[in-house]
Length: 231
Figure 1 (tube, rainbow, N blue to C red):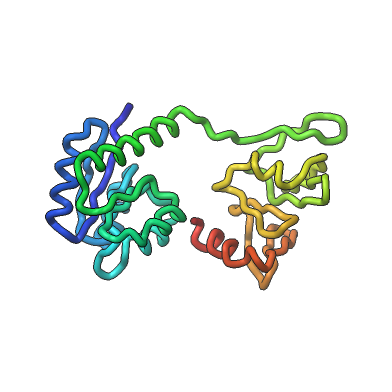
Figure 2: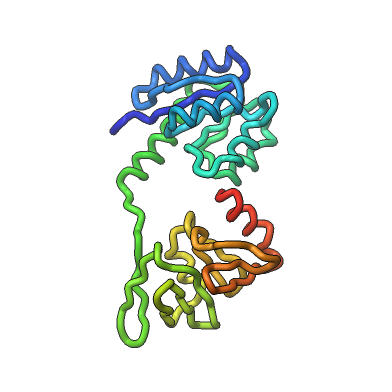
């Protein structure tokens, strides 16, 4: 297994020094840099992309949470903080772990091996690029990259691509479970869109090529967050 590359970010020199010592004792981690705040980290990531961030939350200018929310394709993160109340944000941002200061070597090892398990699994799992659905008495191949959006109609789903539409006997919920979550999103109780295919947003409607797809009132904030910030 290749080493997991990482950066330590903390405004406290003592905290950075302690994490550095732990990283250097961990054979599968490779330290690529240290920085004092999120602004410096942002510049470092432009020059040195890494697999993993050990990221403090309470820092000057911008918090670790705010910084992570600002990234389009962030590395995996292990938060480090003295404040328990940030645990919920960590969960919502899909971080690997959340370590409370002062961090013991045993606690660090637990977080490090959680990261190792994640990257081991990621390295052995291929992301599917298509599925087959039953339509008009045959199995039709649906390539995810070609899908514009899906429309649910009771026990049927219409799958729209740039070249065709396929009607399959299924529920929208059942098909959502088979789609890659990072690429698709439900925008309305009856619609799921491919995020990359959205051309513009107008009021409560999404424009995908010549198609218009509604945004449900209860889902609008989440839809806007995903589309604009791709989180």
